[in-house]
Length: 268
Image (cartoon, rainbow, N blue to C red; front, side):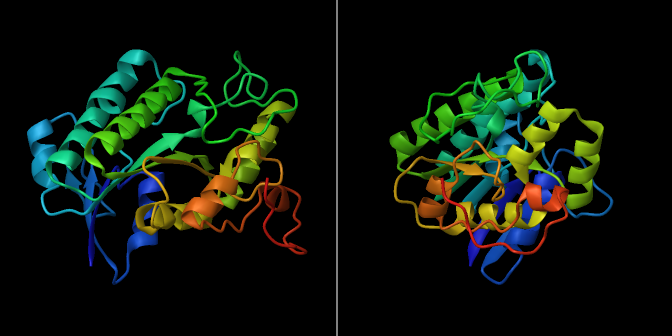
């Protein structure tokens, strides 16, 4: 049985990770920033190196989701958890000889200049070019900058220690009703962004399980984690090939109330 530690377990992505890995093949250790009434987790401050190191004793895999998740946060708000805490995550994983770290990166690390407005966050402009995992990073916020930093740390530790590292660029996790509500309140550019970057809860579970379990063709591996959106600009080809990820949902089908007639998976 694989021992899996999940930080940020009480967050929206963390809860999907729990659903994805709650089976007889995984034994989960759940950590969160504070106590939660509806979920049994161990409170931990990821900036506290010694406590973090002790928490990972005996673990095989770390799914590191703990971070300030706000694209609108200023630098002082993100540098503690997203920089210092991220360093601790990789260092204590190496100290405890973990086999793999799945780092929750973000589409905000690579939002291209011709795709996302520099003035209006989370708004798609123009005709975006396809973004591949090995394209140069183009962060759109301080939050995005910290995700580029995290991917670089993943590269460093993978090469330094041989540890498996998956830099998983997670898209916009929303339930179907949440997606409809967001798009109803947005202008055309905002809706296009949501259609392009949406990650359904079910596909979130699929991609996290793949990132935690799949044999890696190389380390580190950078992969995009979004649904099978017909209007996406983040390539899924590499994720589908390297991790055998099989997304099933499409924002356009949800928003256009067209849930039938799906011919199969689109490839880039």
